[in-house]
Length: 197
Image (cartoon, rainbow, N blue to C red):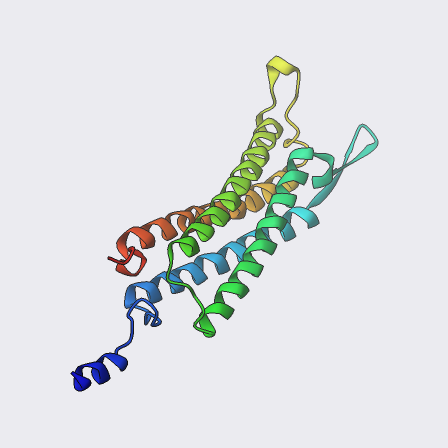
């Protein structure tokens, strides 16, 4: 009886002991870091191109300038890129810091918070890309029903660089689309996130 009590005193409750990271969770963290890093890169490049993009043309002896801040849609795209870029940097630093301290909680709320954050960022990027695409389409082709003429014939360099900037914003959107799918997939497929019996 005494030997049984002594053996029981050395037993560790599995629920209270830290769960070692599984290869699946390590892959999850690596893919997450890559996608967040790509989102930072893509949004930063998009902002740099769009903010520095301008063109001056002369029409009928009059000088006209094209800048991103003349369009509320492009200003919204820059703001969306900036928010997503800053949020991605903060989230990436926080996740890497927690992982190095081995403080990543293997619980449901961790995946839920990541999913919530990534879904909001994805929706914001979707709105910015949609706004930039809409104004870019009008600039390229005009809108005859509204009496809006195409402007890209006059400022082709400005429009081409805007398309490049918009492409990087779309790449950032797809990076967050992947992130928004990553947490639920890891949550559903990893046994470490299942409730204890």
